[in-house]
Length: 423
Image (cartoon, rainbow, N blue to C red):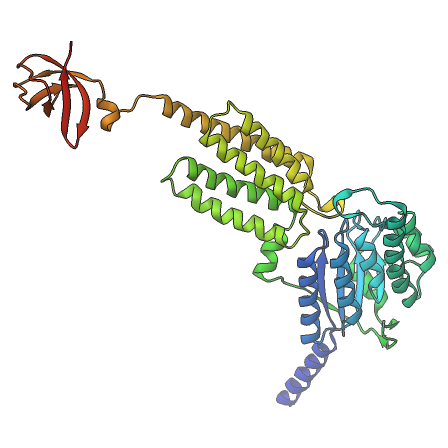
């Protein structure tokens, strides 16, 4: 009897476990860029591989690159697993590119106290758009947003205003105007509202969500994604790159220290790798290279700070122009000044050390012995010994010198001095 009871209990437990639904959650809480798309792709693959019932995308982003956003939308639309986009936590936002991702979800939801919208396109580099170009860019973005909203039965006309008028909507406004489907204070309440809900996927398929006792599993990014996600902020990448350049510069000015060169090379490569996934303005890159050239030349030619000052100015301008993207993706002026000014100060300090070292008298070799005076210890006719700087040297003189006579060094060959009698 007891074995039978144990078997029934185990079968009941197995049925209970199998009844639990699985939700894969991935967070997009930074600027949307290629690494974000890579993380989303892997999260969808994980959801498909583990046969998850739902993919939950947490949104809290100021926006990002339009091309990366389009790629992310393609991944969401093509996902074999239903996708819910959720703006969270309270106080979060899905602005600009984030609003497109919100509307791309099969179910769009927002937490209390969040907002979304302001999806007007910004010309790369921050230049002013002429009216024709502005209309083209806005029309293209609005068409994409209209297609997403209308396909999911949402208010496409109002969604367009987020592009044409840069409108932003609170969570209440978005729900009342059918820009989203649900408002929930947290994920557990969201899943409770979704349980048993029938949705129409982008391809027209109807699916009913079964989310009783749902288990939320956070997507774990790989080491590469963690590293690049951490340094994907252009400001951090710029700081790493400049610190790396500074380390190499210190090694160049003071050869043999080794550590600054090794650490500088690693930091420089990390900074360049992080910037490589972002759209680069080559004018900004050229200004940064010019700044480094000015600093190197300052070490070679003492210009009394002119080259160093020019390098600092070129570095600040280059940093501001380096990233081709919306304002939230560019390097801030405060970051540029914070990095460029100390770099210039350290460079000028190192250069001053080099200039002072060059100005000092040479203490070794021929440069140290030239014109030194001494006393002939033995007769020089033409060879003999002299006493110079308290040291005994072999010497040769074209003019005979008597012992005890004063001599002056005029040359040096190996360890033999060439001297002449002083007048």
